Length: 85
Image (cartoon, rainbow, N blue to C red):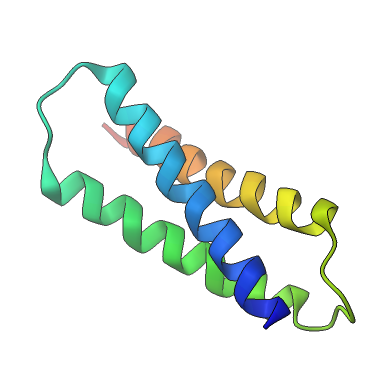
């Protein structure tokens, strides 16, 4: 059950980062771009679940770390996309 909370925290971090990025951009909503962010958030959650699987307990600090890391992965992916253009 602890692993589920870590995964959800990282996933929600990525989703919230993508929604905030959309709101900041002022562009029309494009489902394709949002789905890429959802997939990125899911993959970051899988990575963090794998890493945190070795913890004996989940603390609020671990949840916040996973949340911020999930958001950071989405932001990093966006910056790499901007550089490639």
